[in-house]
Length: 529
Image (cartoon, rainbow, N blue to C red):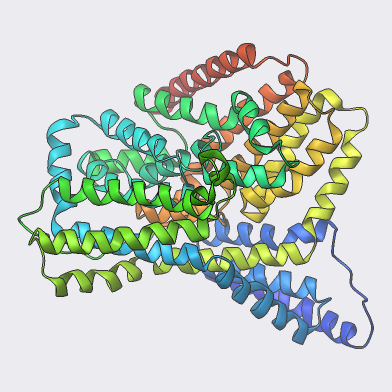
């Protein structure tokens, strides 16, 4: 009740502030100019703060959108509404409509697999073959690593496949969502054949993008150390921060949620004829066809090689393209197997859509908020900061770039937008062909992933919550301490990297620091138990 009152108070204060400013602005020309200033980052910061305080994401995002619309219109009400509706929400829906289609299609495939009994059969197989909680966590990690093509695809596929396994071993939904999130964007950012590598290639100077991306991989400390962190945490069998309570309740009480609303898919009575192949085959077909669809969209049939096709692809077209074919295949396969009737198969399609509505709603509003930030010229503001920092701080620039990328990605909720802003700046301030340029590039990419990983308004974070069927704010609040821990170690490594420009020395040191940090945290956890 107190949180709701706080939210209403904040909204009222914003409106009271906006009204007199609006009246003043209507009577004058361009009296408020916030574009390209610190104010460009204020709307997403407000949204994030409200989400963390109130534990309610929809109204928090809407308040951020409204504030951004008012800022971008110089507080003119009619222009603000136009910004919110046309430049924000409608542009968000049209810009990521392909991802919406993919979400709905994937939801339909998951519903089909559940109804056919494939998930239940896989759960039974997993109970017999995956004997421990550690095994279940490492299996989730391994599947996340294997699906490196695209983070959206990764989040929803890993979640749907591994939920029965982690539930059987009493792993909390918050922990499952963390495992999904930590093997989504961080994996894509170190995979040369992925939609992320293609995006980086777009923003880098022509002909240099993929080469710079590959050279930056060994210096991408956040992504690489996150993988070390997950494995070590699982093997050491402990947790800290808010995650510890979730895991304790899951183990001792069988409570997979602890607090927040129970985000569960509709319970269905699975077919008794279901087999593990009814889960595995649709997923394999989905992966194979989506990979082909991505390179097809990139022009592989027009003579482009595999790498060039990935560099030129568009995931918002390729993933729906592959997903629709996989959905049709799954329907035909399930009906041919006689595990369900054609009518039952058709009934699964709208159920899959319904299951994805929360993720689609949050994704729409988060994208609209990013559009407001774009209208306010956040890129120009950050570019000015970076230019000012370049003079006299050459050796410390990788660490500064990492922090700026973290803050920008956290505030805007987008990795791609962050490195789209920063990569041209990084390329301009470092000597061409130098090792410090590669380190600066890796710091930019690592910071973008880190901020995206922590941000409540990140699309990957949103879909990790959906994949793990976890309350979104619960996922964010339990994940942040882990992400910040790895980010702090990464920052230290980038400070050192400015002086010791050799990844073969730096990466082992980073791994040792990560494992040592976890040993220390485990000792503190034992003392406080």
